[in-house]
Length: 400
Ligand SMILES: Cc1cc2nc3c(=O)[nH]c(=O)nc-3n(C[C@H](O)[C@H](O)[C@H](O)COP(=O)(O)OP(=O)(O)OC[C@H]3O[C@@H](n4cnc5c(N)ncnc54)[C@H](O)[C@@H]3O)c2cc1C
Image (cartoon, rainbow, N blue to C red; front, side, top):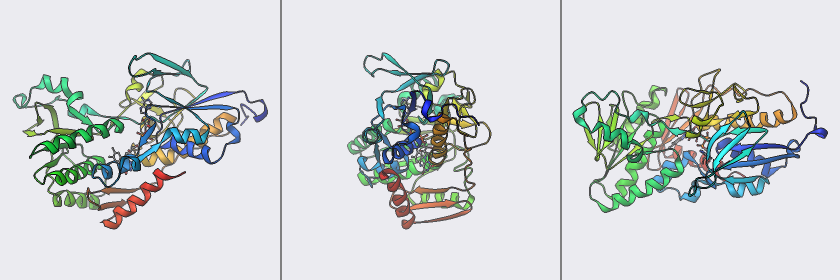
């Protein structure tokens, strides 16, 4: 393949990294270790909302007080300095791929927008929590809850786990409230691994404050679908051992401290949603091709299906050629391939495919220093798995 920009004639180019997710952290670390020839005449910038990225894998451990906040945060500002990359700390609100512009709020107070142009764009902004799970559509018994109020208040009353930065602030408020009363209830809504980790972390933390506080899980018809049956049964046993009620009903709105399911209302002083992901809000304001619930459509090279000079990886993107879960594992491993492809694109080299492995290691923390691991059909549990998880997570957060 002919090189678009042979090294010597290559013009100054702008590579914009949007979001400081797993993939961009990997690329920045690579640049901090070694300045790459390919980027010699390329201006590289990162636009991200916060100067730190909180590592989701350690979030339940932080909720349960096993880690300090600093231990689960990756300092993006320091990383950019080490990598010699400009940091633009602003939230992205839109991407116009036809004019090659990323639009951000200037700052949260005066809400003026600012535009950044690029020749090559990489998107790694993660995703938002899919709250549609909790709206009252299909609520059979409308006497259970004030439907209009529940739908109107959905965004104010339910605490989504994403964006994680906001969740961290809200969890601290939950703990403060729990300290003031003798009977506090937290509902976690969701049926995936994140929801089960969150409910066990919440139960552990609440019961340190007062043993009569309680967390429970509202998970719809099935818990952990897609996981091996042995793993699922281990998780359910651990939930039961921790006295966490599992309600196999679909949550249908929250109003006036009542969480409705299709059959009953449940008391909830706070409700956390870990109900899967949907595209980030900015993805509703883009002319990039999107699929499903607002994810950027990408091919096997993690390249936008509508605009060649845009790549996307991690939760922000959906592959059009295969089913692939939105998970940190794909953000990391897909991110390595995507970074290589950005560099290859700059010099007109051949792009690589990201082919995920058939099996991935999943380690699920149970609140206390105990965890369950799954690798294909094999699963195991114990304190040693928690320490293994801690070792792997710390290695990721502290990597240089
Ligand atoms: C509790 C919990 C535990 C989990 N555990 C695991 C696990 O053990 N293994 C696993 O594989 N997956 C796990 N996941 C899923 C995993 O967290 C996600 O799949 C992963 O974080 C996606 O990574 P990412 O790089 O796409 O984006 P993220 O890690 O979400 O990073 C996105 C970045 O973009 C920035 N950003 C977002 N929006 C904007 C904007 N508008 N403007 C500017 N910047 C923006 C953010 O501040 C952040 O820096 C877990 C999820 C949760 C909630």
